Image (cartoon, rainbow, N blue to C red; front, top):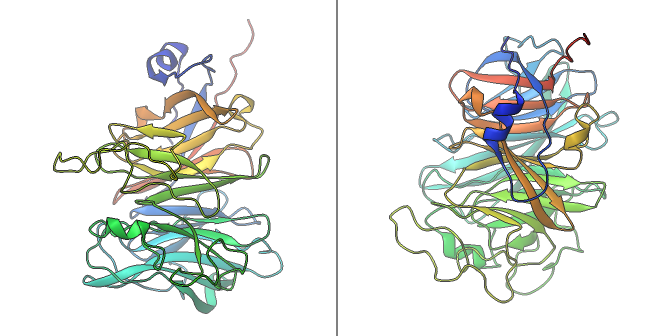
Length: 374
């Protein structure tokens, strides 16, 4: 078990304020489970257990006390694996208690022809049964980069799936007849709802919900305010947090704050008419990897804040919004010195993290013990 208490002096050193007061929150970090190989995503089962995906193609069960079951979940679909490709997100059906569907995203295909796929299976006695392929993003692309792969369910029980631009295919993010660089909205059966913004329009993909994205690796729905947020992995700079509205263009690659990995300018425009500017951008890149909205009770000072996991920056960035504007940022958990792949708010109000490594861990963040009064 790793325990860490952040003192007020450390808070002052790590808080990156845009405006407004800092909120000193002391916390404890506990290693709940270890021995995970490149864990990617986490979902909480109603009975207290947890499901964790490993990028290498395994779905694992973790008991409520942190015990990692030795055998992976049988029936998990296999797919294409590369540095960025493999088994990605896991999410439970909104009616899981009645219909125990588990939704998974993974890369399908091969090195020269691949993309992102959505599937589901019923979790029965520790295995997946009746596994169904629901959606396969097209066109296929070459290379092992930019798959997106995150899922968020909306109040109407449709889901939004994030996708990437395929790296070498970034211009396609502006092309509405395919899924590259898009968010897609689907029913739980994988079809396009008829109220999607481009449904039935000639030369446009029925599934597209928004476009002009690069590599969306985080998505979170704010139920209190009925808002959908994403974070978007930029090149050298230009990482973004965006508020998503159906049918809108989010600019990539026509408008961006980032520059290419070669140092060349991607575009002379940071904003353009008819494109949506980001709520926040990070330059240089922090490499965002997951997004959560804190709605628990253990940390009242964090209520409603966005939490963006980061790989390169080895932190979780807490972002506070007020009236649609960023008013405060804070870098958290840098003392771990580990790449953070996922961040989730548990049913118990704790914050949970997955570290991105061959010896990955599941971490639990709870408030620090209060000192006894003298």
